[in-house]
Image (tube, rainbow, N blue to C red; front, side, top):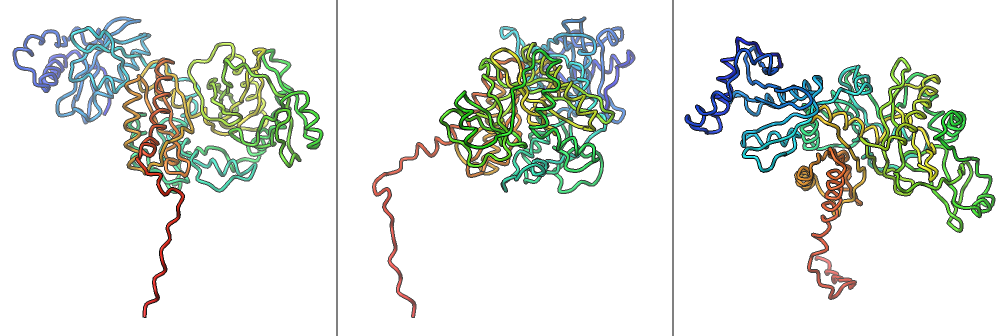
Amino acid sequence: MRVRAARPDEAEALSALVLRSKAHWGYDAAFLAACRDELRLRPGDVAARRAVVAERDGTVAGVATLDGDPPDGELGLLFVEPRALRTGVGRLLYRHVLAEAGRQGFARVTVRSDPHAAGFYRAMGAEPAAPDAGLPVFTAWPVPPEPAWARAWAAGGPDVRVGNVAAFNGQFCRVPQRPDHYSCMVMFCGPMPAGLVLPERVDDWWLRATAAALGWDDVPALTHVAGGRVVPWGRTSGTPEVMAAIRHYESKRHAHALFTALAPEHPGIVVPARRPVRSRRALARELAGGPLVLKAEYGVGGSGTRVVTPGGRLPRRVAGLLVEDHVAKDDRFPDPTFDAFIDGAGTVHPVGTGLMDVAGTAYRGVTVGRVPGGVATTAETFGVHVGRVLAEDGYRGWYDVDFVTARTGRLAPTEINLRLTGPAVAFHLKATFDRLRGGDHLVRTLDRVPLGARLPPPALRRHVERLTRTCADAGAVLVVTIPTAAFDPVPYLGVALAARTPEALDQATQAVRDANRALGAMFRDLDVSRRGAGRTRTRRARPPRA
């Protein structure tokens, strides 16, 4: 199916299509006659109204127009042949019109909907407006230009994504033998993939629900790679230059040395002093001056990093640990992270800055979309400088630089990650939702939202369907990013939320947390007698059979 410009000689046939589509909803002849002139597309209006048609196998299946002049436009017509309803024609035309509106410089598009089509426009991301109007009225946002980094990332075409999170981390330190739930996140790192290779079994409902939310076709979960472009979470093999750069700069010791070398050129950056831990006794003496940060040379997601305070418990073994001056954080700002990637030619493509959710030292998620300008500029300028050094040393691929915000307002870089990251998922989802729904989205990932009860797949699917409706009512879209931990001994769910306003995003976030927590109420509310609690019942041994 393709979309093309309508021709003036098709005007009468398209007008007839519009009336057939309108009649499908049961309107009588008198009503259709009354609105015939309003719904008519005249030959002279075809170009002026930017009319387009969806065509399948040479047959026109739908028509749409973009009326008006920038900045405010209107979706004048969007009608589908009755026999082609619910086959994707309406979605294709709607997205084409919003993409064209973006190219033409429109800021918003008004939709005056037939009552029967109101659900369609809500599902497509349009937001209700003019509640007192006689007919449903929506505001839709044009599709912004595709970010340069997203075009460069997808330049090789559809890829097969490999969730080798545990294998990548295992290059640097011992990885506990447990399910690799985080590997599911690789699904979201780009446009629609050709397939997924994951270490954990995922249910078909999750693949279908994700594809529907992101406007994809079905995505196969594979057990092996047959060919094509392969994008792993992190490289475990490759050219010697790339692998050497990964091992070098994933090291917190070498990353700190790079930060120290670059910082003099960046007045908004402060690098805390760092040195090896000599002994437990020396560490205890240093703690007399205030909190310190202990770091293993390698670690991901906050593992291997801990803050120790005067009088606090010290690790038994300190050999190989690094001690770093503690940066007094500005609690008004979450910890920033800057993401970028380096293409095959060594060009650094800035992606953006996000604000991380960090519990202690453990990464739990990120919010991307709108970061205070000063923070974003400082993080990007320094992060791009880091990327140029990585490129010179042979690295190719995604990377990020994590920071904390000091009370002085300066940013303190803490580590470099040379792989796909949790924030990478949020940035890719933002690009997807902006492309799919138009406008400028905020995206928040919550990688570990506790569940109040363990949920087998059918119960999890029903729970997610309820969550999806609740978030939609708040003006947000929900996508499950980690579905495989819902039946763990300590169950949790990973989700991503997208919304156009901070208020809608916060409301949806709270709704997800509350609904997950409420799952435990079914057990708390059970009327269980305490009589005999703690008493063990035993059975008399049966006599042996003859």
